[in-house]
Length: 181
Image 1 (cartoon, rainbow, N blue to C red):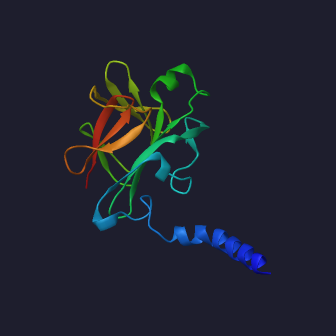
Image 2: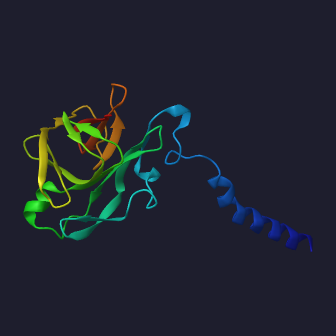
């Protein structure tokens, strides 16, 4: 009888644990202390970033392990992730490597970006390209190469040295971006 009570209590604790843990804040929920939070791939869920995205007439799966973003103090997001672009023509595949969703206006390499959805990629010759959903080039800016990064990953977003600026990396190549008014 006592053993049965222990089993029932253990089951109740195990089943209740996810509900209990979900009450604690996480990075993808509310930024602490009014600060912007850099999100890693483990913080990005299908609730805030789709697993499949539309670009140039078809849908492509997102590589959720290669995503990142910024959760701003006012609860708005910039999210990005690499896509499986194998279903696209070689001309589009060269440019369209990842997907960007932004709820805020941005400046990337000195160019203004309105809130919306975009494709982007890094080109040979140290260039970053931003595309609209129809695969039309919006702009190209120079990218930089970070030879000092210790363990480059396929994709990441990090905070830059200057407050309010961030770096969007693919491998060692990056562009800096910031939120604008």
